[in-house]
Length: 106
Image 1 (tube, rainbow, N blue to C red):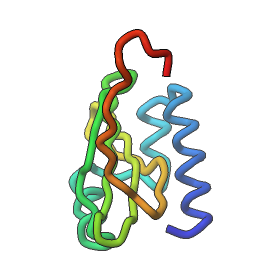
Image 2 (cartoon, helix red, strand yellow):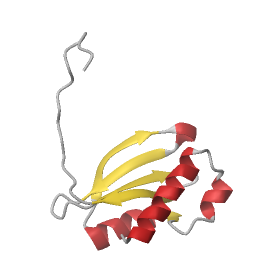
Image 3 (spheres, rainbow, N blue to C red):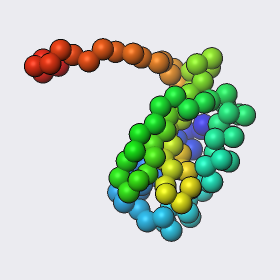
Image 4 (spheres, rainbow, N blue to C red):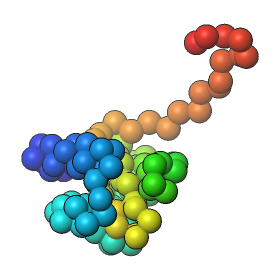
């Protein structure tokens, strides 16, 4: 993604996290139906879903990445199936860190 696209993605993240309505999100140029976004990430960047989580208003946050190229993308999908790009970058690494022992403030 270009620097302009990254800035737009970061702006959209702020809008989404700031409780933007679905109608507002649909007007953003970096949003599309989920299947289109997933297909494009796979075809253009070789990215597949690496992790996911549930956010506010039942929004699903997903991290897509390519272990080969190191590219990564974070998306948010709303309940209506519209997916927006939130952030992207390079140097993705999969980590499997152990939790600290109970009682440890780390």
